[in-house]
Image (cartoon, rainbow, N blue to C red; front, side):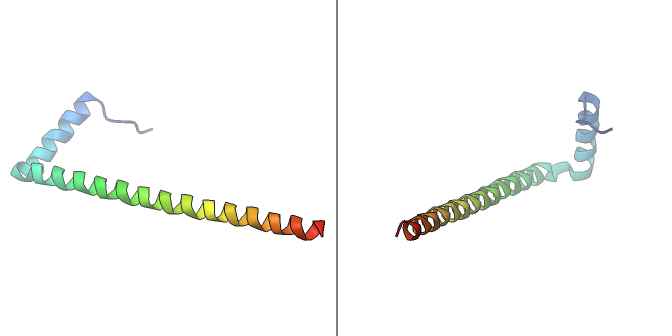
Length: 74
């Protein structure tokens, strides 16, 4: 169906980008790069939050199981 553009397609995309953006192309690329960096930081933050929450959940489960075991042994 759809795949990554080949050599000619990239050339056409580059020409169209130059026609549309002209002198502003470096600014547009810099902004795009900053956006990608911010997106990656956000994804990393979410991953850390998920990891922290799952470790807290696992620790809580372990503590609950220990409490149940202590109550059963009495």
